[in-house]
Length: 419
Image 1 (cartoon, rainbow, N blue to C red):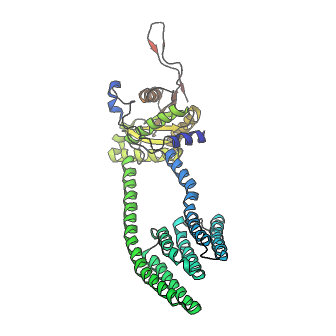
Image 2 (image 1 turned 135 degrees about the vertical axis):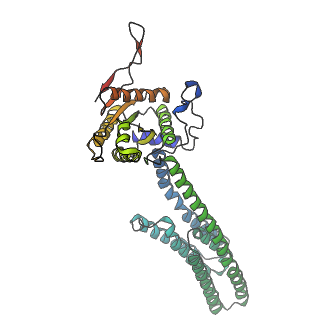
Image 3 (image 1 turned 45 degrees about the vertical axis):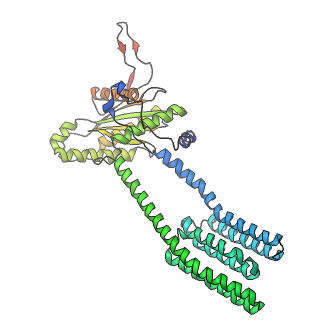
């Protein structure tokens, strides 16, 4: 069941949700029911989390791809007869050993407490060290040194601090200067020395400037990330009821229709419960409006402690709440509703209350193809039957038998059960 739900969620990812919902069209005279909105369910969040986790190995292929490109460049030098075969083996060994070391470190779980970005600094250092070593072994490869150094720096600059980036830059320039000095001492080639000094001066001017410019890009990236986080926080606040802390009317109705569409597409079961606090006017009279607000807030907290993380709980209006059960048959939904009823009944409420706080709940299961209006109306009817039956109970309105005519020709409501 979970795989089917996840597959449907992945399949519908990126689709615009409920911009113009048919279930609440004016022709059904139900415009007061609510307005649908784009809604990101916990299933969608779980699916995207799974995609991110599956995508991490591909992100870790980026260093491997860069190493492969550099190895290809070295092979081109070798094919042109410009470097020795031993250098190719050294490069291949260094790349293989470094990647095996990082892979082993991650697989051993030692990096579990670290974020992926925190491994980028040692990656950049290892890449720069390899480039400088190959440059020392084969001076002709200096033509490929600068481009790949910039690529290596770009890989880490979005996550490295400015001080760390400048420290890496200084280390690279110091290593480059050391290699130039060693070439001069060991080879004594004046033309090579002149060329390497020119390369060093160009790199010494360009690399720090590149780091500083990328610092501006990093700053913009962080500002964008901060703005994105703030927008998500604002969106989350907009989805919540200011009093009860659960989903508000707009969000719970959008969740209901989204799950209805998923049920139509996949055939998975879907249940809906309408929950209403009993004698709430009496509670307001006894405690005042502030006390009544506290009762609503406490009830919402109790209910959210009982419902599963995949369920949707929201305030429809006043003392009425909706509970959507995705991928859930009728019996488990009934059991969840009964737990809520029992939790509310047994809770130690405000001492000024002269009676208990109880709830009446109506629950039903979705019938494929019906409208959200029909689905909601059946659950709402079950809730009123619970009121008429004495309150403090859960009533199931079974989605069977569809209104059959009686002998008198009047419609007969489907059977319902009291629990």
